[in-house]
Length: 295
Image 1: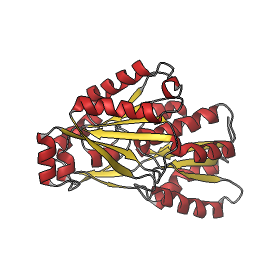
Image 2 (image 1 turned 45 degrees about the vertical axis):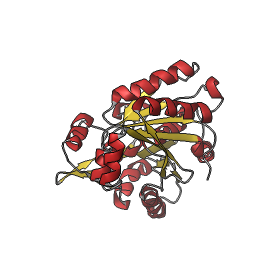
Image 3 (image 1 turned 120 degrees about the vertical axis):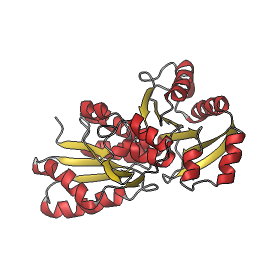
């Protein structure tokens, strides 16, 4: 067994069972819905079906990141056991969780001066952040050192592509992210926004596409344009969805038809409660290793 532990945040949006099987502990973000506080614990406290059903019925959840004290409580048991830590955090373009982890590290190293705590800003989110973490776990399991995994993740994190589309503008309108007029026109014209993740880890609009079938085709085309080794791509591909599995499945089917050398079938996950509090239902996100994201 390695002398270090690989950890991440719940916003990596992989199944709870996956993190358990891969031995990747995670620290939970939080959300508030209808006046009650919940942990973003990957569907354990509240199922994704209930969560998105309540949003569809009008609920507007709010979210909060992991604070310094929570990170300290999360890290310290591993340090007490003599383990070093490699922690991969949600993008600084979306959250202050990375800064919380860095402050916690400085406090803990005063108490455990002989140990190492390495923190990575993933510059990613949802199952794209999960894809990066999974690759780090693969290296760990093959015997790579803490420093080697850290260096690889830092060098390759901008190669993880994030492409998102939404077929439901209702939640964007409720949250004030788009105007009532834009939402009405977009819905009338069946507009599906296509977005991606920038080099500095921010979610940015790419284009607007009319019709679900067209945006599904376009998101797969973006993979063809940017993926490593083109149709010979032999890495993993993850998809996350917010209560629109059938749309995600259509994207996965097209990818599996075009890319015959994938490392296993496309994994389809749920967008978690914290990311989903901002997207609402109807979002499909595609993640793969490709060319480096640039300014």
